[in-house]
Amino acid sequence: MRNIDYLIIGSGIAGTTAAETIRTIDQEGSVVIVSDEPYPLYSRVLLPKYVLGDIPRERVFLRTLAQYDKKDIELMPGVVVAAIRPGAHEVELDSGDILKYGKLLTATGGRPRKPDPCPPGAHLFRTIDDADAIRGDLAQLPVGSDAAIVGGSFIALEFAPFFIRAGMKTRMIFDSKWMFEWLLDEKSARIIEEVLMANGVEIIRGDGYAALVGGSRLVSVRTVSGRTIPADIAGIGVGIQHDARTVNEFLETGAPDVWAAGDATYFFDLTVGRSRHLGNWTNAMEQGRCAGQNMAGRRTAFHAVSSYSTSIFGLHIAVIGDMAHEPGTTEKIIGDEKSRDFGRILIRDGKVVGASLLGLLKERAEITQMIRSGDVAEAFRPPS
Amino acid sequence: MAKLRIKVETDLCIGAASCVTVAPIFFALNEENKAFVKDPGLQEKPFVHERVIEVTPEQKEEILLAAQSCPTLAILIHDDETGEQLFPAP
Image (tube, rainbow over all chains, first blue to last red):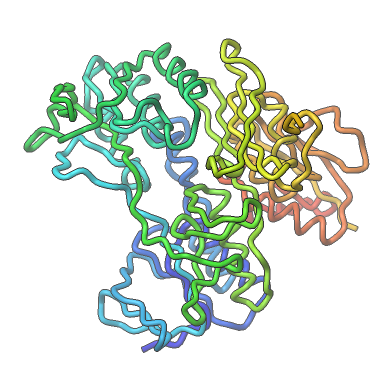
């Protein structure tokens, strides 16, 4: 049995930022991070560049073990939590060891949904171990191999350059009507799809996977309609499962002395006035900081404008704020599809609440600021 | 007041803009989706990726947080007077 002042489960950006924030406020209390991964903090954002071979593996890590020591933060890597008992302020590990905490943060992120069966050659993509496995497989498959991408959202998008650069015949399948159907309008999605097709990706819409076929090695993907997509390798991006905890604007879970931060939260978004889930690096970092402040006694509401940012074959994509079509939401389009500078701005209660932007880099900062401040530029006022 | 040398390594910058989120007075994205450093005392142009700026302790804290927030560790901060690298901590 160990007594720990501040116990953090999860060594990703939310957990690490929380630990470092606590330490800037409280230099005395013990701060311990437990993680089921054996690594110090690494950048999930840099994993695609590592898979492509654009950066060496060491560059993916954002902290060294020495940096934890220097801040008097204890990292316990490769440790699995078996149970949390908030009433007793206890966490039980797989080993049977009990950690008694003063304050607890769960920052456990999530795990990718895994098809069953999932034969070797079918790859998830979330961790550095996944990245290592993808690199290994790409290195041993010849140019002209068949590659399948299962899914139509952010992770599926990441796989496209891996397979195209490796000279593979690449097909993407997803059950929705267009890519990012849950987030983007059809016009924006078509622009993204056209960029993928121009770079050699065949896209099959409205037909998701039924099964990954193969015994000792993946052979094909069978779709819901019964099509067989040949696949020597597959990239799987069909969502995340997370034990998301609902938190208030102070990232409190409601259990005494338990906070949550990062991908594993349904947090109350003050900017848009509703609870949402968001799997995004910057959001996780900001939540980690906010949770750390609250845990160390500085009551701070979480108030940050979320944004996804990525680029694919030269097309920059940003999604800022809240894209949900709640009642009373109107939209304004800027730019045009042909130039691939195309933006959709969502307005509710007289305020800009969200935007999806393809290209339009100059406008991004201005729109982000509008969402943050709640001001509405004249150009975005709905017609009266 | 401290003098900080702030540099954005543009080949590492992916335009995630967390620095802009944390310290919008000091960082912005240019037309190539790369971060550049702003000096609040000057006009916005020229877009430079490395600057020496005199900052208050609060501003220094904000800039260090911005560097820390970068998911690709593309922001380097040095104390311009002593030459010491402040972030990433060596």
